[in-house]
Image 1 (tube, rainbow, N blue to C red):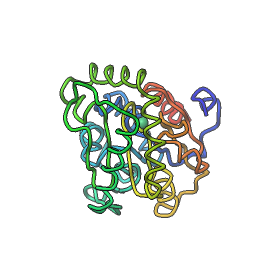
Image 2: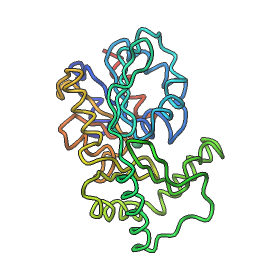
Image 3: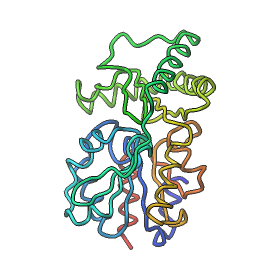
Image 4: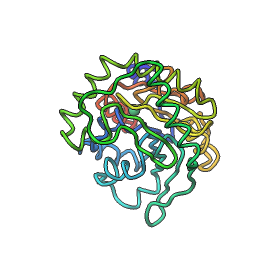
Length: 268
Ligand SMILES: [Mg+2]
């Protein structure tokens, strides 16, 4: 659903609001802005909130938890699903890992080998300048970032996001082609595009829809009471499985859209 359509709807029945992280609550790999943090704090007083992002738990801590300004007793309403739902953290006097679907060494090697094969087949050339490693082993997920994992760390959020947007504009079709080839080569894994530049690989069946089903079974919330917001709801995007799962999903283009949505939810 387009954001404007959603804002016209009665959202009172939605008790669990599920957000993607990068491109939705924050800019790519950037810290949450103070106004978004306050809005989220107000939302946590009224609703339960889940965040399902492609990044690792450490990334969630850095981008989100370190800048959340809400009262500690509201954190019980917040559920964190790093690495596309392959892990769950709940707050019980501190953040506790509830489950983790870790990849074996062999699975990881298969994934790395498949990337190399696809790069060769497509004559893909890495950019001249990269920032840190292009692959990150997130335990439950392998992430490929063509410009390197440390773009934002090395050149800051503003320049880093601009660089990623520029890459996305020029090379997104290549990224989507890599996703398609990899998925054919790796039928036992899920291959998705996330954020502006990244490709995430997790074990088969482990994607954001899996996260949604965990909310349903572990937290006992029916899908009809969930509302999801994400910036990659297009086919092949890492939010697309949520849409396919039948959850009402709002397509946002940037964090300011998400903030509008939160304000609408707070207005009741
Ligand atoms: Mg995203």
